[in-house]
Image (cartoon, rainbow, N blue to C red; front, side, top):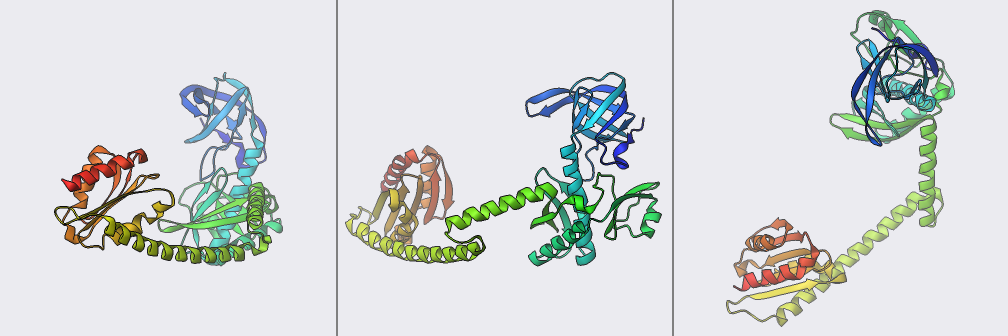
Length: 405
């Protein structure tokens, strides 16, 4: 059997008639409501696009059956449906909103890839059409923000010119002779999609009739993916939704910062500068407080029989911010051991001056045998977090008892 693919010549075909050639039970299909029974249907002809080349499959109906997925099976198109169909005639209908959205994204991808290739020498090595954003992976040097903006602008110029988008057929040699962007090694008659005076690319996907129907292209961001650069973009109604969402976010930020939208970046930079200055001042004050607190604690702590000062403290509320600087200051005092824990978060630090001669790692292991925690450190300094902060007082008491043995 060979399914005649109606979408090859008419991507705008929304309904069609066909004959059911076979309908066989399939593996249960995973749906939002759980696993459901499914059947594989092969038709003599179909307008349903199967998942291929980075473009997801169409959805819709075959008679009363809901089309759950569409897959390639050699020369056949397999329609995965939610009920059994009888052999004979059946009418198919495409989910047009989904189809047209995919057409906009896919044609937009061809155009954007052509611009990156022709103007900037960046080759597209893969394409993925997602549910909200689409991506292309580019190979070559990193495309900086000005290059991304330039590619977006150049692609949108072609869109606004509303150039025709046509389907061409020919052998690999024939297509190469007229400037196909990507060479293919397949034999026989090939299908290619042409954007007038912009691109010619072998492709079996569905596309719009003219670039104007792409609407517009919005390039979002670029990230490093192994040796390539992944560019996120959206076309058509998706671009409109994202642009509107971006502006609403910008508007809310500007209102929060009490400035005009166009002044948001400057306001954020000012706020960050002020925050950094405040944090620097706070760290300085915290350090001074930790030094003073360490002196008081050491002077108020009696020396044990073996000449050690053991400072065991539970820090609560704002005092928790002193956990690290206080531990560091206490560990500077000769023959001093600091056992500190925060009551609210269950964070703890065991630290000692090297002259104390204990092993903080061994002490932490003893505590962890009774109270689950994660952490580690050195012989003189360990830091950890208790799985349950309610055990803070008990863990501190155990550590203190262990040291005093």
